[in-house]
Length: 151
Image (cartoon, rainbow, N blue to C red; front, side, top):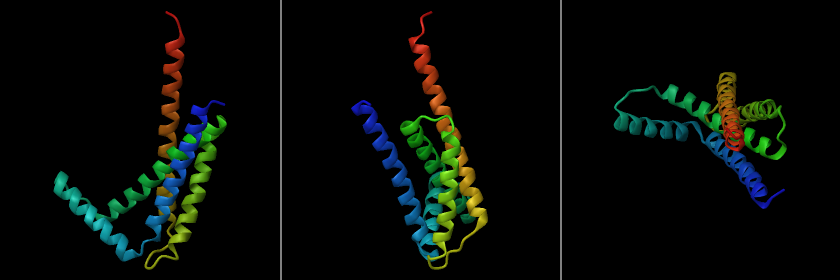
């Protein structure tokens, strides 16, 4: 294994740890702090884009986005480390397990609750991130195979 590949694997797993840490920190916020952050972001979106969106939508989109990032990063790290064709399945299972643990963790944050709908939204986000990672790998593989073929 080359030093470049080892570095890429370490970087990939670091990205997974960062995503998990970020999600954990966001879930550790109490309800009031989390709401204040959402309200602040809503004001910035309205000011920047001039569109109104609901706070509930923004919060659910945040769940979706966080887990899309985690799904992408976990799929990438698993593929870089093991290269198995079932990597997307393992990435989805791992991300869904983390989504469940995240909702359980929220029970211990003031004013927060464990909601199955959030696990479903997180899982949909994870699946989206994994599909994007899979498509990126397909594109990279095709470009590598295409660049070595002679016409």
